[in-house]
Length: 481
Image (cartoon, rainbow, N blue to C red; front, side, top):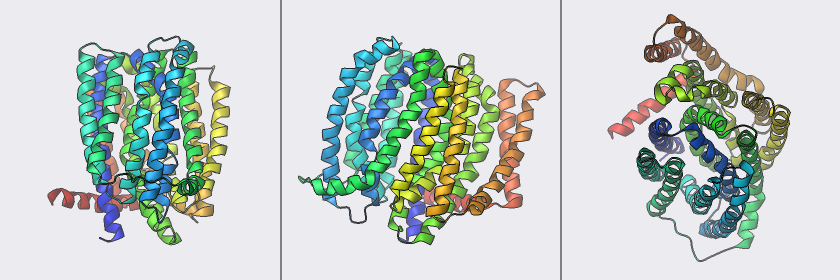
């Protein structure tokens, strides 16, 4: 199978896996949001601050290093596997020891048992990260599809049933843990790889020399991201944090389905072609054009229809999350194309540049957060837009310098799509003033937005439109076969 065809087939499988996961998660989250309170989500968000930070120490760095290393063998994979298990156990014990103090800090006693149970996820992550690296390196993304399918479906059922029975926050805990456990177990049986009884400190040192820079970025990115949740949970209320975190779900749903799918396949593909500079650049440009063509109009449309969407799907008790959702749409729009640019740097061995650009961007982000956190939750959310713009500009510079992707090329690839999205969003925005109820307002906005954007694409035929047609035809062919 040619590399281009392999990339396309794996992209289809990865995209299908993300669509399935996010669609089921989206439906389950709507049901849970109707059954549970914002405070329940706030408690989980406060707990996840610490689990996410611990988790990133286990999962970041080594996985990418295994994918990027040209001659990685089973000794490398086995060494990382045993190291991850050995490292994840004390990380979990640290969470257990800290749980009572974290609960006292927030003045929410329920956080203590919740953190002790959800913290087990760190151990499963140590195993799962090596499995994912093996799947990615060997371009067998079909395996992800099945592990995600069973994990998402079963965890959704468990969460909804427990919420309906009145278990409150424990329904979210059960959903979270069921997903982690089943996902890992299914992938364990679906992937043929098994660790050998071998361990090489020398191999680990070689992987660390590449992976620690990605680990640093992952940790700093997670800390800055979770720092906002930590501050909101402490300075404001669990309900405020619940609205804030729920608002992130819809924009992330779009970004995870498209940008993450493309980039997950792109990194191993670029790693295989890391010695061919022009080839890497071509893949980078295509991924940015493709993700921008799909994501810009979706995020623009989501920001415009946020109010009727939340009212219909989540009920009026969640209306306070609407302005945050609109802000997160613009925050995510500012960093479209960032992930492919990062993958290009990492695939060509420049994880050091990847790290340095984030040191600068995260320092600015923390400074902005500290300067506004006492004002309001809205000010905290708005500071994220400024941070995203600064990070985006930084990544554009490193792409120009190290991947020879010039500013004019970067702007020329994205600007037509931005213009089409704005031309679509403006008339959709004014539909809300027609005086219809929420359902017909939302329906009219969606139909009008799709019609305008599709019509403009057919007329002007931007590069993203052409690529989307190619992938759509390939996907239909795959379904039929």
